[in-house]
Image 1 (cartoon, protein in one colour):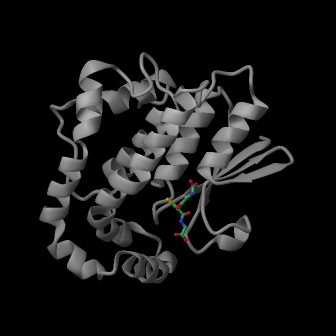
Image 2 (tube, helix red, strand yellow):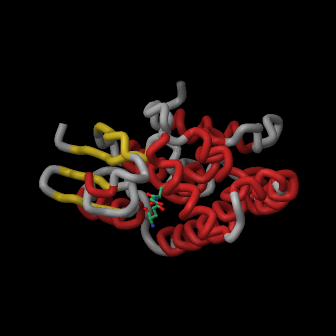
Length: 220
Ligand SMILES: N[C@@H](CCC(=O)N[C@@H](CS)C(=O)NCC(=O)O)C(=O)O
């Protein structure tokens, strides 16, 4: 297989939980491209020479970062369905990306960091504690005591997504696009790693997530 994706893994290496890697996996599926994944841990930096995943190796090309990978896939595989689409869809996708990275994912991080910590490989735990406590300015133990408030803030942040999906099947319209992949990645991070359910099973989000997976034949 000439296409390899370095994919963040927990102690159980079948648990692949990076929101950014999920974006890329859906993007590759959208482009009808086959690939194999290589489990990557936070302390495996030397494997790729990059500090973060996703990293894609496509033949003799190595591309790092979900955005660069998505742009590369649209450039390299123009005959497959576009991820970004033409303007204005591509520009609007940038807004969705900012919303996910500046509102949705920061709302999830205080909830998920303690849950991720206990599921990591032992060799990753000290690194994860140090970097995430520095980033959030709070200890993992203190985050646990504030979980209920963090969940309420996350539920409030979902309002624009819930109202959008009441009126249309996907963020990108009638079929999923890269905007869906981005938000799916954030919510898949929550679904896989949270110790308690965070999504209302009677609301539109579980059905939308399943529909995204089903589009690419990934629903199990
Ligand atoms: N801007 C990057 C962000 C990727 C990122 O933050 N990846 C995380 C996993 S979700 C990572 O590899 N972190 C490594 C670390 O914290 O040392 C992208 O869009 O791909």
